[in-house]
Image (cartoon, rainbow, N blue to C red; front, side, top):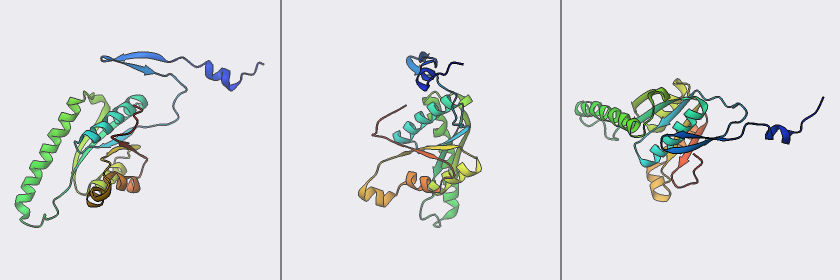
Length: 184
């Protein structure tokens, strides 16, 4: 029986091929079946350009692994919510509704097929807690989140939602930075 080396096994794999998706050519590398199983990817969106970059990464991951996306927007309450609670509750419903509409427009603008999206959620509360809780209750396999890259005063004042999500998430977290090397 003839033994084959690892090098010859690797060279016997199928070569890469070029596939057209829309107007762009995409190189697909056919390799050994993936050992990584992703069924559900949670994507928190705050409607910034950074979070839309994370969404592009998530769509690529979902296509490659056959996963579905859960899109989540979290509306953080105002710190002085006890002042006139009834008008703020009415305004809160209007804000949540506006966020649902904006979430739908992001999906349309990026031409994301409905077959990739499992849920579109808008929640109210502290962003990092709501993201971690959504990942836990919806059994997300991965969270893909953006960071704004604040440093110094802005970081101290605003904190880092992505940093807190990494600490509290029940699953792995991919943090996408705006000004770093792209691999998608």
